Length: 289
Image 1 (cartoon, rainbow, N blue to C red):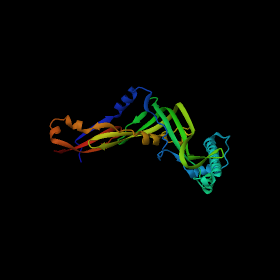
Image 2 (tube, rainbow, N blue to C red):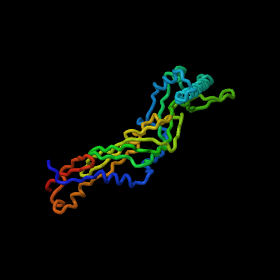
Image 3 (tube, rainbow, N blue to C red):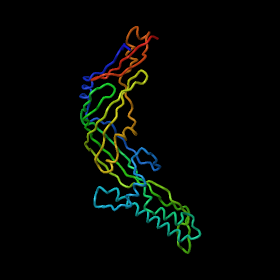
Image 4 (tube, helix red, strand yellow):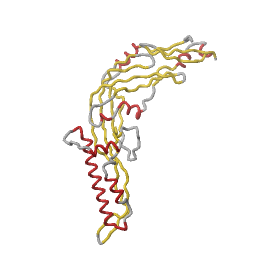
């Protein structure tokens, strides 16, 4: 089908916009606190089974690369102490005890259960330090050589059972808990921060037609920081998932037809095709009203 009208954005225009922009240019700046009722499966996690393997392994805590594993071991020591404390309460309460049985306590103490870990990005600021390389190419445009300055704060949270005493008892002047239960809660295990960290990234802009408007959607392809905890988080996926980068308008085909006498009252847009090499080109086919 023949093209009746077209709108195009040339490479020379993009070059001017990129060079005229003021740098550094902040594109993301956000803070968020870890929710205590955390259930979001989108954050990177280590399963209970994987943590159980850590607990059963011989870990050298003098090696910095094992820092998370060593902190898991320390958390397990705290958990075992709490379980033993509950055993003491149970022993004092005797027949008044209302809580987990010996079998349940033994099962909780067993190192095969492990914990669940979650990696959480608390803060992220990304500044573009200088002009990137953008080469127009039809439906998908690559964005290369992006130099970034990053501030970030990342955390590791651990979920394991905490003892909740719901009734205290007293016998012979000795106070103890005689009723309670365990609840899974998230505790901060480790955190790290970096500031003004330089890194590179690649991305792209995809074009799509929505009705009679052409939109662009920017996205990172590669965005990693080689730093403890942060290296476990694919920041590109995080940016896409949590910041919901809004599409931005490239061409409004309605305005193109509206400025053409006669056509603006007798024709309407029937289709839009995206093409181009070294340009963004929207080709319009018109139909009579």
